[in-house]
Image (tube, rainbow, N blue to C red; front, side, top):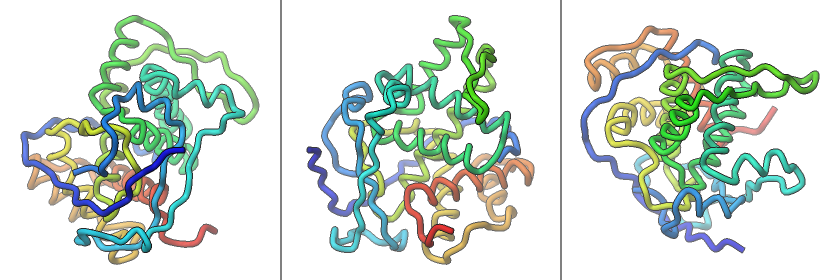
Length: 266
């Protein structure tokens, strides 16, 4: 049994330098925990998801105000279980889901990628660690098989492009930062190492925090693009196209819906 301390905590961010932003296709601090590396964390197939309402400015929430539920990897699905046996498998699983969103679109496919990202966060993986795994695979020339479609298996394979690595990891970084912007420790992380690099944290924390505030405090599921573009201008000195910003916003809102749903499911 995993014993998890769910006491409140404050997520702190350190101002650092800015990183470049790659283009997004229109397809779409930390909790106290044992010091465990990503590979060691792979032994823990289950993790807490703590749901509950609250404001971003809240510092400490009593455990009594939080609703706990287990999110576990199914032990009777060998293929799914294999995806979490190593950091390389995690990177491949994430990339296949990323490419699935790009190729097929759809909110269900997006949320499947998000859930895989949440698992990677909980298991102690970092954005740069997974970037190195994907870069190594790309440089080796190994082809990645596409995910199965609803009609059955597929034999489609293709090599990983460097642009795909950058964008996939950026999506993952945004998911990780969104988790850090929740008002309580929604996901327990089995590592004390920061999940994202410092420059990416500085670049995207304000963007994600604006959306999280609208989600938790104002009960919103969408925002005008302009305030987010202004945030990008203030941090990076330029803003992305409205359609790209809207896609990134959808990624943040969808992550919040996965880790901390606020409304009854339809």
